Amino acid sequence: MTPYAALIAETIGDDDPATLALVEELMRTETPTLDHLSRPRFKALARQARSDADQIKAEGWLVSYCGTMRLAVPAWATSTV
Image (cartoon, rainbow, N blue to C red; front, side, top):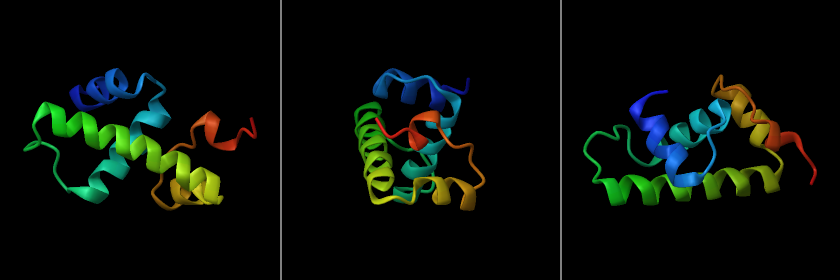
C-alpha cells in the first residue's frame, strides 16, 4: 500500500484497493499533486472525495466513471443496499 493509500484508508475507514484508488483519483481532480497538502487538508480532501464517490454512485454513473478512468469498480459501487 502506498503512503497516500494508507492515509486515505486511515481517513475513510476503508482499505479496499479499488475504493482507495477511486478516492485518490477523485482527490486529484481537485489538485493534480497531493505532495504539497498538509495532513489535515489531505484528510479533508479524502473525506470529500469519498463523499463525492457516494454522490456519483447515487447519480448512477460511478461504474462508467471507473471504466473511463481505468479503475477497478469497488464492490459497494454496484450494490443496491
